[in-house]
Length: 165
Image (cartoon, rainbow, N blue to C red; front, side, top):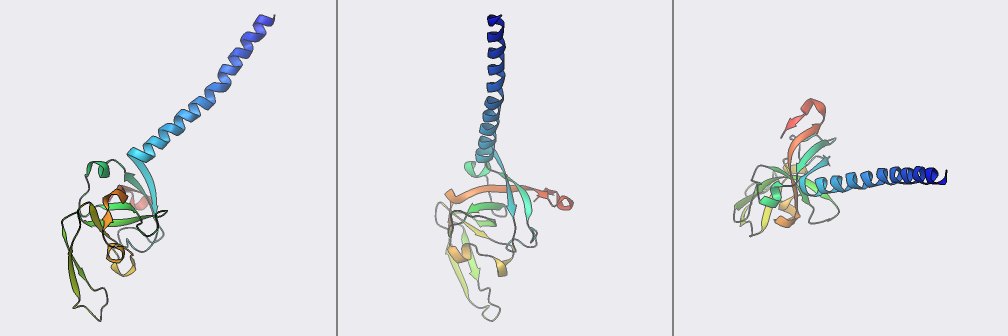
């Protein structure tokens, strides 16, 4: 009789440890997926109007492309903010290293002001689509390539605008 009870207890203990092990495996896979392959992002604010909505869009972010330098000018990217490392910002990549960037004045009264610069090696130049309401490389300069978080490739929300960007 005691042998039978010990078998029941062993079965019970095996089952009891099986669920947490599966949960830990799932969490590890989720962490690896979000860190190295694919992530979600919420992008609210006026800086990317009219491409992204003011109230915010939920986007799918490719984490693989930046690792293999498969980003190009025109891509919408997520970048760790050079001003606040706890914040991730969504901008359009406009220039890569060694590209020439021409900065014109945003001030309507002073449209003659124009500067030209070369993006340094190992850096990128990012700008918001809404130049009047965006803090971007025009404010904080070229962004080190290491701060590039990912490349946006698909809009999930709002549903009516579901699709590639």
